[in-house]
Image 1 (cartoon, rainbow, N blue to C red):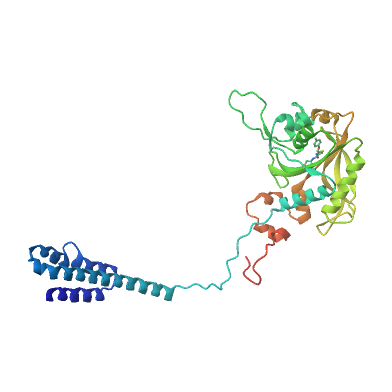
Image 2: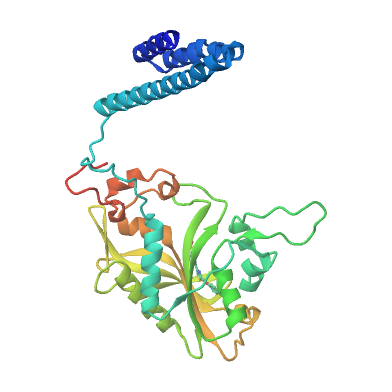
Length: 360
Ligand code: 2U9
């Protein structure tokens, strides 16, 4: 018995002195491990007389329980102390403002596309869309641009590759959004009032040309639509887009395979100290092209040219965005880094920051 009490004292003292998890484990092994002192005593129970065993057995079990309890308590104490130490050094100021979220901003071209779409919606035009990879029939033939026509070459078309031995005409990246109107007429017939905004592609790259750019085309087909309706529509559009009372439109005779007659669209403007002013002055801003839809185009699109007629026009969205927001180089629109656009005060890029807080 004395021996058991002495072991208890010895290991309780060692447990109390253990300073970390490893030392606690070392105490446990030397007392309760397979070859530990308590385990050896347990094994000696076999050689004892039944009377001795009756007292030594329960005393040894009690010793084991006491040591296990003391070791567990020491572990918990250590963990609590570690947590206290962390709580004393690591802390969180929950009153700090959050970091400003990096916010996306609408691209100037997308914004202008939305503005233009809204203006034409007010004039009764709905939006039509179509594929950017087109058949050469929808992109060219249906628009009265036959295979030998020079404007196929002029348009610097991107042709999709065909598999070896596949001699069908290649698909193309659409060079204008006109095939959208062809598809719309084939599906819905006449009358119609639609605009087709979207991406178009031509193999061209300099200060005023990018291989991908944006167009908006309009089409109005009815029984007696005329160039006068076209002029009024364009004047309404220009004054709404440039936010001035009235912008006069001038037509200049032109030629496109898909319209007859055809006209270039100019808006009256002036340049004062390098600033563009719409609707006043003696200058003319070239804005796009237009005309009455060619009878052959109506026919290709399944619309009877003896019953229906209408106008079509095309405007370059990127240039309109540059003019409205004073951006000098078209190529910069399609760089991935738009931070510089803030230099030009593009309003959609002025994202809100935290009140009185950190600005980027
Ligand atoms: C159909 C019939 C006719 C659309 C037209 C133009 C003239 C034109 C240019 C403007 C600037 C292209 O982006 S740009 O370089 N477009 O000059 N577009 S008439 O004529 C159509 C369209 C569809 C069915």
